[in-house]
Length: 117
Image (cartoon, rainbow, N blue to C red; front, side, top):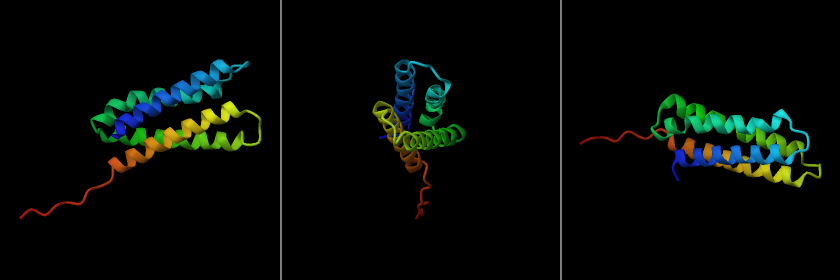
């Protein structure tokens, strides 16, 4: 799987979970839209990830890591509550963000120079 496909999948999952959380709540709160903002940022950076523009690639990697850490923080926060749907949303978002981060790091690793004879 390429880094730009995992980045696109991550952006769509983050936006989807944000909309799902926002529409499922009785009181609409702003923190549920954090995933929407992160997803839109990743979606706007996806073209730069595909064409390997260094600044956009690094920014998308950092945003994916931030999204994964934010999801894991929310999973830790809701661990004792009875909000199972909220936990599932955060776990799915954390998995896709972690997957995107790993694939971007694997694609960005330095290669060994080959000796020409």
